[in-house]
Length: 293
Image (cartoon, rainbow, N blue to C red; front, side, top):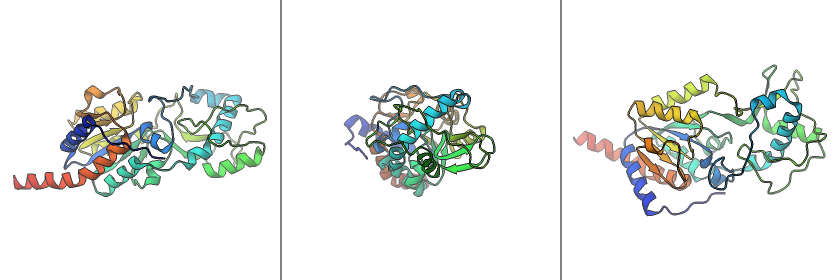
């Protein structure tokens, strides 16, 4: 599901300024939940976002009832979450990488849509819903296989159509009574989705990978993130310290609008498509001007 609208005059002007400051540069891209809203996955903080109280890592790890609630809600939302398709914004970023403009994507999303759209270098800061792992022995499982196990062990579970999906692919279950919590088939240990819960830190090696991508770039585009999460601000500051141009694309204000070289207040799908159409040729023109000079 993709909703693309025409850019208004202010957004069109901002896109032109963004193309001017990014022309001839290789850029890193940081994405947040707003990039996936056109695929039917709601964001956390944008207009119309559902009110939610996210489960913390401490709750999940310390409470059987919390894990039961998580796995019921996560399974009920899995079908809709897994069925989401990449939208025009995801495809535009894959195109920018293929054309040599983008060095890769750092994403705060766990939906895997950048990978499915064709982006090759993707740093998933908060992990991915595609995998589940055992906290005891480390065995990794494909989420699709786990879904089959959950349905086998809980045949009474029904997945409603048009279920109100949460940003992490879960829903608020009506009941968790009688639900059999999935366990590791190797050692019987506790299973956990391969995502960073609220209250957890991003793995240091994963953040270093994101830093390296920004360090290897000459500009930074931030799309669909309100930059409330500190990891995004830290990457923005890495770019600013090197005096790189920073372009922010987001509907509504972000925490760092005053620090952007260009802020584009518009939908990410249409803006990223516009950048993907303009930047490759703008880069050649910028290179030609430098050679002529």
